[in-house]
Length: 362
Image 1 (tube, one colour):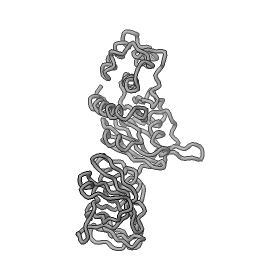
Image 2 (cartoon, helix red, strand yellow; image 1 turned 120 degrees about the vertical axis):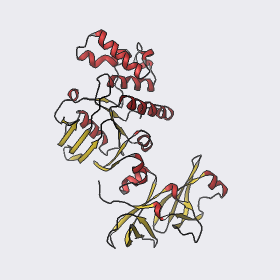
Image 3 (tube, one colour; image 1 turned 30 degrees about the vertical axis):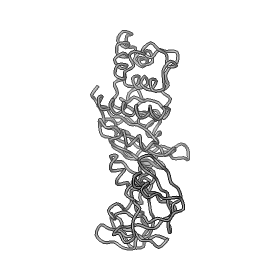
Image 4 (cartoon, helix red, strand yellow; image 1 turned 180 degrees about the horizontal axis):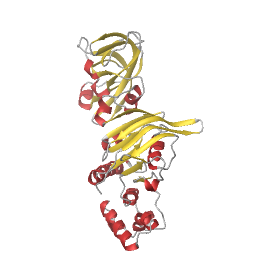
């Protein structure tokens, strides 16, 4: 199974009566890539996946799979397979019978479908459990069976709706590695819905961050992490502080904004006219406890909360005109000079570690 297809959404909208779940999104997922649709509950990611699968009708727009418009085709004729969040295994059938079920519905002879089912079970390392019932399997084993059942149809794209959400934290990490390895071996396109930033970062070649039915950013993980496109992406990914203010100056590729509390900060990005509103983002792990007189940007903040995370410590702070600001400090540096809740500390970061964000949705 080496075939793969690019998936393209062209101005796709989905409405449920007066409510709009997906708003004119356009997206191209390259053939053979691992794409994660990421966002909070209700952002439209699952509706988008179901429209690609054909389980949800499209209000307007088109979906193309490998250059073919599949908008009006039923799921069975799209060349996709879907793995549901619940796994939806038949409790009265054996593992092998579950995997072979779609071939049985197509009238494939029993010896042929049994042989192919065993091939799929070997692919997911479940061949020794072929005669068991789903109730006799662990959550991770059930997931492997659901994967084999989806892959037996030889799809061009596999669609996964929050496939790891029912697993415990340790098994999630193990199954992430299995999914990535499987996608790489098969070479087919994977589209995976998740609300976990960590999961998307670990798995995806392409992360599509959604919010309120729109695409905020579609880019490789490192780009999303280091260069969030909008304030929502910066906040949702959890690795940037976002400061909002008014443009008070522009010089080259540097923009200076003034905050309500009187602070001014510079950031890299395209300039805007003075007086317009702007947002800048600062990586939480680039913020450090500074010293007066350093040639860096920063402010003096009051520590509101401290969380020990093992290799790092998370500080939550507030300052003039800044209600919520985060600094991630290495554990060695923190415990060399411990800080307590209520302390006032100088914070600093380099100007290059701050970027201007786009206020318009992608």
